[in-house]
Amino acid sequence: MSQVEESIEVDVPVRTAYNQWTQFETFPEFMEGVQRIEQRTDKLTHWVTKIGGVEREFDATITEQIPDERVAWTTVDGQARQAGVVTFHRLGDARTKVMLQLDYDPEGLAETVGDKLGFVKRQVSGDLGRFKKFIEQRGGETGAWRGAV
Image (cartoon, rainbow, N blue to C red; front, side, top):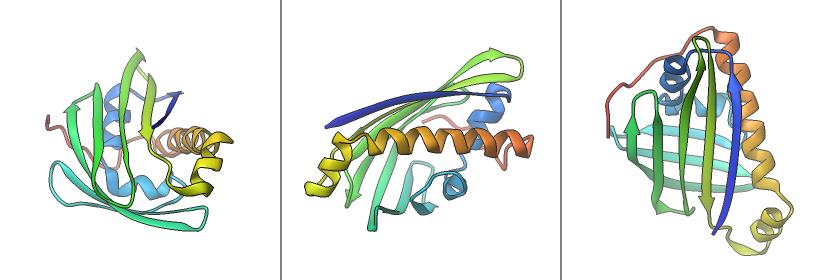
């Protein structure tokens, strides 16, 4: 297993950043390589990704969700093995630190080489940067799910 840890500060309240992160179906708007996410139940999502020409489909389950604090997940079925957590830290009334930790298992030679070259770390950093731009330009979230898991 490999691990990536990245964070970014966004100029929105913690509630806004958290609420947007719970809108999984909008991830393709700021996550490169994510083609589609379907929210199947409160805990189950289905992902379709295409990264480096390799398409993958998998299901992920939300293992923990605490409003304005954290969302954790793990894959349960399909062509990818990963687990992660994103946490939200209030830095001020309109500033939040978003921290992402991702554990993943690269498959095959191409993914292993890409992992060693830091591809996933750069991908995560870029995705967080696009999330910052997405949420700050909108001025608010596209929706919210305030339930706890």
